[in-house]
Image (cartoon, rainbow, N blue to C red; front, side, top):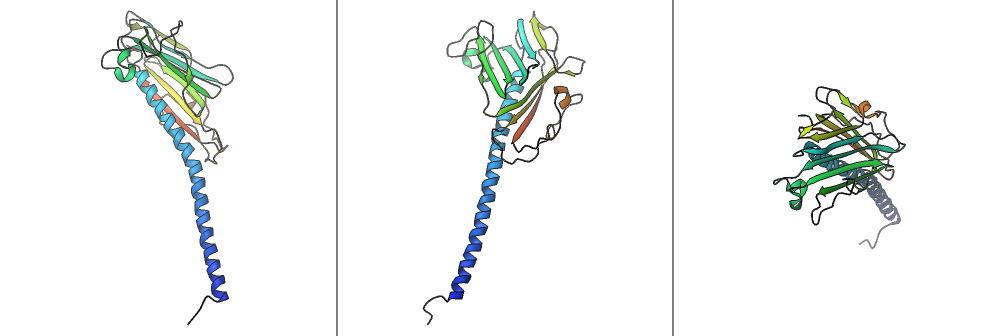
Length: 248
């Protein structure tokens, strides 16, 4: 009867255990590395998608129900670190509670986005004031607050006039007797977010994941498609929305 392991058997057992532990450690390390890369990327993608969805809904109804006032105001960023800005307004009616809240019905809602220094700020307000909802300032604009956790690397806006091409620049649409001046048929917004820390992310080529309509490209927004290889995670979205109330 055997009473224990021989020295050779012990050495073989130890070697096998060491091999198994090494495989498990490498697997765990690879899993951790993948988590470090994938999770920040997924969070950025979620933020970019939520922002794109909100912009698409708001832009589509810009100018709705307005007899007068500024329905759309686009500002091209000019200073270092300054991206573009947009402000839009529309009248809230019954059935639009999903956009305006129940208390906002019968009021004009203003929405503003501005990106500078890597931070996207946004705000909403309603006029006349409604209890429990943010009121517009004396300038008719909402107070801005940080809208995203991720760094905004690009927030560029372009517009298309009826029968014209895409242009990035200042544009103001003012309603007069329900008719827009300086008409805008569609608005496009390019968004690119960048993670706060390096994760060893693969090279990112701007525009590669997007489908641009005819006449619109990254160069329209003043951007390049040169690959970014610094290891930061990124996510991009393109919003292209018709503005039926501003182009009629």
